[in-house]
Image (cartoon, rainbow, N blue to C red; front, side, top):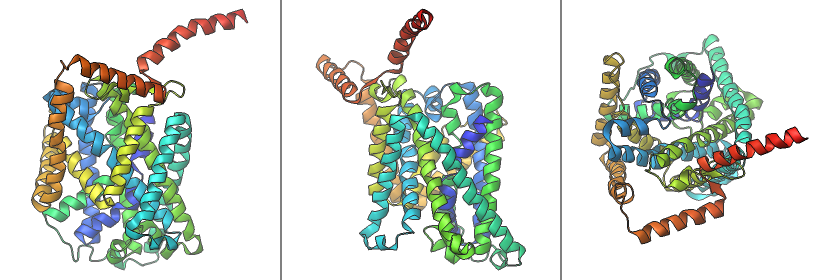
Length: 458
């Protein structure tokens, strides 16, 4: 049940308050958008089952990075880590921060005078910075606040679903009739619509990052995955039916904050509560992602493919300070360099490339074959329909090849370089007051007998 809570808490976040706009904007009809949402849920369950097999077969933290490194060797493993480092981990944080800012700023119309969405970018940057600071200072604070954030997002979704079905129960179901009228179905709309839906389901692979901490993973990992994603899929379908019952496709497409548009229509004077609940919910999604991503950096450094500094922890707070600061810098860069839909499409394309390399063969063969063909088809359609964006993403991944050979594969570096690198690592340790996890564990072990002796003497 703890695994179910982790996955549901991570998945249900910012996506359901934005992705309905992205999905219906691509396929243009309620019926087609609901099919995309259902298909995204089915794909997530099948993909997660494949991950479950890999998680119990290779019981190491690190998720797809470890699986691909074990299967295809250090070069492909490093390119996976490179992609996760700069895209898969940082993009959701940046995109969620923009969603948070959009919902907050809907209550302050005067910010519209700022050009090119700078108000949202600056507020999003403040949100990322604040949560990073909280996670750097005390992980327990972050964990405690996560309970509040989870409650707010569930409350917002319950309100949307109940009001939507009350609306239908009163006989107002015109928007659900002729649900497939005006559908625009082609390779590009299907791929980008699926990326928008897939964004809302993001997080089902996070439990594999923590496989070493999960009790009895052979039983609990598959159960946690299937139960949690089934719950999420049901909630998402109900929420989208509620959105579609109250709002027309045109209203949804024209809204940057669909939950607020819904609340303005159905909640009357209490509509001001919706942006509050959603903003807190998205804030929690950023917090949950920040709490989780440091694990993969630790594993990458442990495998010798990232600088040792990134695997270190704060000497006093015992938090992964270096990895959090680096991820803050990358997230802020993405926040200011791209718009939200570019970020979501970039994440979908990059993650589907990784998924094509992670399909196991021990579970019933049709499942991994279907997921593999699905991922490959999405990647191919994206390259064909949006070649410029795709080539930019592939080009950035390819940059990791010379980085790998220069920084990882080349082991016999000049002694002068190694001295400077070691000196830089020591300097960073002194500045940030961080040590390796093993060093801290050894000191704690040495201190334990002294503490016991002091207690006995007292």
